[in-house]
Image 1 (cartoon, helix red, strand yellow):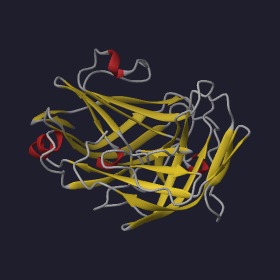
Image 2 (spheres, helix red, strand yellow):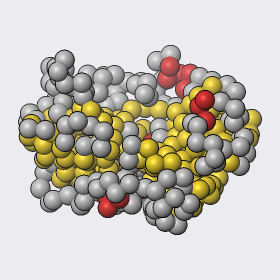
Image 3 (cartoon, helix red, strand yellow):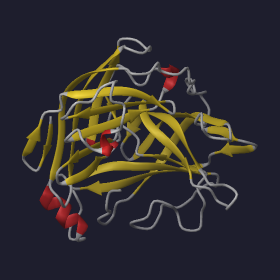
Image 4 (cartoon, rainbow, N blue to C red):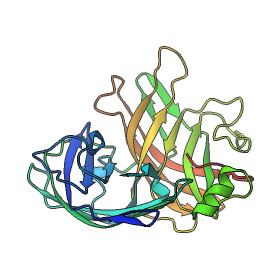
Length: 302
């Protein structure tokens, strides 16, 4: 079910697609299946929900234990992105070939200035494409995070866990937007990795240290709610290379992270491999221990 500010719709239709290495699941109020492969955002299917999962370790697409993943929900009032910290889902695959079933559950909520959007319930859809044999980075080595991107070696010396304040209710969302008070929810928005030692935390409201160029970011990791973290299991994420020069447009790599602790410090393991469509090959993996940064004043969630 999709509920937006008290208005509830049942999403009876859907399909699962393989897209650029990810598993994309679309659910809709109106007819949608493998005979209708158009993205629901093109219209004609009523309210809809979509989310995607990267391959994860061992190409499992995070089947099994609960994971956090961003959900895009669309209704008459507009489109809402429920960040990975505010959504939990499970996925089970009956197979990896065309015609297999993809089943699971969704539970997510986001408060915005439009109202509160909630997605909850189960789904059972057909897999329209065979899942590719994309090999995500297997279990990482025991050492610190390291790797390469093309000919550039990646050696990490400082990691920041950037925590944001998020409104739990509509009233909290309004207070947060106006800068009157922080939200009651605290989540890790991203992990930022630097090749310099002892990099200071960013100034209030920022996610990058002033005067320092990050190597990369681990964006919107699943299971990173400070009050209810998902520990000890791989979680979806994306590694972002912002690109430091005009010749480097940046890149997004499918990734996963496993948090061992989330508290006064954040520790775990991470793995990522260049996307199949990225012209520059590479991978990174290893353990990290991050300094927790912010928020010490209201910070608007992205």
